Length: 338
Image (spheres, one colour):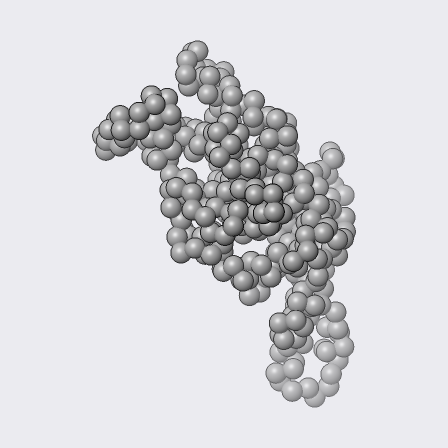
């Protein structure tokens, strides 16, 4: 597949996917977030596959890590399940589930230099229960693990963190700064200082925020972007507007067929409904963009995918459509749906 950026009909007022991928390929830590159910895991998988493809000839390594409890990320990228250690699923692409207990134990081994001692202490059930009672510790451990792998140890060239939902993201990303501001000088504070420096460096860290083309989700998306940039000084490289319905065309002509076969009428009604939703979504997005009082990060729209994205083949089809700017009608013709 060609990764050459081409202007996409869905992204004419925003950023083409190839251009976004090129920008993100220069980051070490990419945080993907959005409200639950908006498709942020799908976007993380798309970005992981795209960046791995781009860097394969240079031997670049990309890790997509998630805190999710299901295995959807693994299914989309060709594995059966996620594990708490990186697993290579295709050349240059790894996946992993970040588990707080494992992250804390690994941090203990890093500090003491003795993995067996860390396991004896932090692997103890009573100690784990105690650690879970400390506010923010799990969040700090997971974020610290992602930061360490991406920015300090640099085990991977890029780490895409399928992070917590937007309501929790500001808390998670704010924990290191809170530690710097409130905890006395010591090993934990020194770690937090280094984390804050990396998170606030736009050459190292950036967020990609995902939302739906509806008024309230778009409003929340804009507010989250403003909070990350204004309160936490974290760069936002793109807003992704997911599940945009296509403008298929021809709905009126189909609807005007008199005495049509009932099956054709159902098809015409379906096309008309999709078309109406697509037009409504575009009007909503346009109104949202016009109402913004401050410069917005670049935005990219991702088309609605009626076949779902639950395996590498479907993910590759959606990725190809984004790269080449093909609309859904062309894809239906290729697949023999239309």
